[in-house]
Length: 299
View 1 (cartoon, helix red, strand yellow):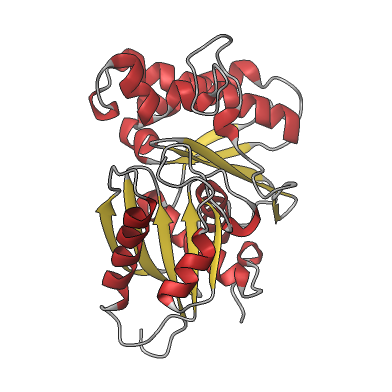
View 2 (view 1 turned 60 degrees about the vertical axis):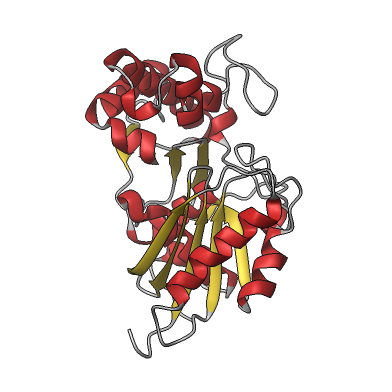
């Protein structure tokens, strides 16, 4: 690793915090993780994130050239202020500037699922594909879309938020205030609230229903955006495995029947559990002017 430029990659989620080093080839070289503290104290949460990052920095002799951060949203553009629905300790929290100050690195922040889309498009299942959606089905549900070779940003940087596509009319109340959002029906938090058991103890019917909800949402996106691939990662989706993906594909098939969407597929993200950190690294490289979706990072 000596002499090879690396990015410090930080993944901030409602259940876990992780950090690692990602080189310019998309390799995840070192990683460390810790549970996300259940605290209303935003400064304590930040201190835990910084501690995880420093655990990684202490393992290598050379300093990274940049820090890329994948964080749960929503957020203002560039992650200047973040307000993750599943992390109430942060509301309008100035994440990018605080991390840059504490770590002493140029720091770039994006939504965690948009970061995943960057990683999958760079070295994962979306490599060489012009259009696809990458999804995280975990504590929450997020998405990032690549259309015609470009990561979709949107007016405020929050494009791709498939977790708030409505999949169940008059369904469960979501943290955003609406009812029937995908996140309110299929996230780990929602499953625990609906069933009274953690997602890892879900029965067959719950697994199949979760897949069906995801398939419904992807069908709407495939019809709307003319894309034919969804790469799904996250602890719930990957933990549920084949029964989840079979149910999701069946729901997608019944909801996407136009000529341009009928062949759409839902597949596990190719990067697996490394995806969030590879994606965070890609956010860092893109912040320095590189284009990971081109297939290579040239600085």
